[in-house]
Length: 251
Image (cartoon, rainbow, N blue to C red):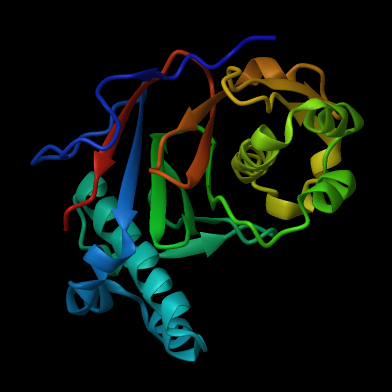
């Protein structure tokens, strides 16, 4: 099977350029620290739509509210810079599975993921994209979750690894699968057991097999990201041979 050909242009999480330009053969991934970005919460709040402000207000936990305001506010700000429009003027629609997309503006597509104080946002032109970020947690029944959601071969691979590698392997598998499901616009409605990815730590990120269409692995590029200590993340984008850049959001 073909491995990813999303070629990095620079080290992970470099300072962004003053002027953003997203070419047709590029992927941009942004890393956002929630605590740092939320220090500018007034600026973020101003760009949110009325329904987004209401959703933020309705969230029970402050940590969820901060994460939502940052992820949606920064998404709007970055889209505004790419599209040369006012962030507050951007209108989102949602597909039947809840994936957001731009209304009335062709070209830029995006994916967002957040976990435990970090947010990742990925942008590309005219092709599908998915990103997923996970914090390496201790309080999950990983074997039980894998048995319910992973393929038979993935479960066997996971169980063959030494205990010291299983947690990383589980989250590596999960982020690759969820990034693919997001790229397909299906999210968790796409059964994870119906497609397979590599998962052994250190092994290249590859979409091995998709039951519904044997051609799918050749359509998608899959790549691991490096969010920071204690995290794993994956990017999936339609089409190979794209150039990728990784920016640290600074406001």
